[in-house]
Length: 487
Image (cartoon, one colour):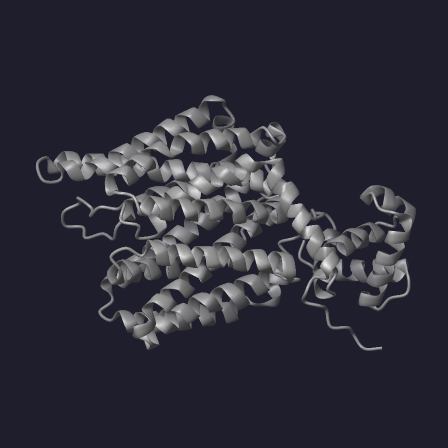
């Protein structure tokens, strides 16, 4: 009998189960989606898209791209916090910390929106206000993201992805709405948003075991996910070039960017519900090719600049959602500190974005640059799609997996890899992991709250997909695979 080709489309029963999981996840902690949605709106307006809320820099002699100081302040915060994550815990767990965070963000936004008023008459004051406001916003938004990542790491990649889909839907719609308002009202909104954002973040912590969330991963040795960090840097590089091109090509691309983000949200939702997709497929066979296609359109067919820009935004936002889900997997599945994972990966993304904006500003021919970046993305995707992602434990893992890895024997990692390779559904993976532990069908049924007959059916399907005839064969196959993995 030949080996079966794993199905790539989830069965109707599995799709229904995932949809029910979406409803339960978001209903259990709606404040998390709202808090992250407001964070996305704030960063979209200030960092990631030309929504006309960024004035020219007052730094004479330094023709920096818009928002450069915000990026620098954020990168410094992410890197510092990821290195000192154990010490940061003792501060951020304090009850006063969210209030200080909200005040700092609002003050920073106020200063950042006011500095243009001093540029002509009191230039030195404008520079001080600009720098101080940039630092407060960069540090504050980074902290919001890092605090939210604690909860995302606790709930795991599947629920994190569902929350993020709804959050980005809220944030994208909000950013577009504010872009339609007069400039003054938009700036007032940026100053006012931190208050509800911090309040919703505080409420979201009420739905999780607070002490457990803050102590997560503190006793685990951190492992540098090198290829994930490189992936984030390439993603940020594409973002920097892309949005610099948009600023130079459109007076206001709010509608175009919003359309791209909404399309990406729909694509991620489709992939998470309909497809048996792993991180390798989502990153390097969907996200990177989408961004490369957008750059090819910009470089080869300049007349279709709107289409190319929309495809670029779809690819970037898609990558962002999957990256956040992977951070949640590395935190929950591999027991890594969320602050460490999110801090290092986001710093790499923002450094890449900064490099991209500077390169675009120095490039004499934007169409040639777009084609070069497209080729770079394709080559990067080909290089990073390798067996090392499987051995390191995340390439073949699905965002729908919440399984925790056994750091001693790598058995749980082998379970995830084999389940993905043989096309097991999420429920079949749960049954498989308990079968490998030697549990009986009755015990598995009690553990998963399912009828013993249902467990028997799942077991039969698992044997058929693995082409084995007994539980012992399944255990031996799993242990042999675990022995090949890096400890």
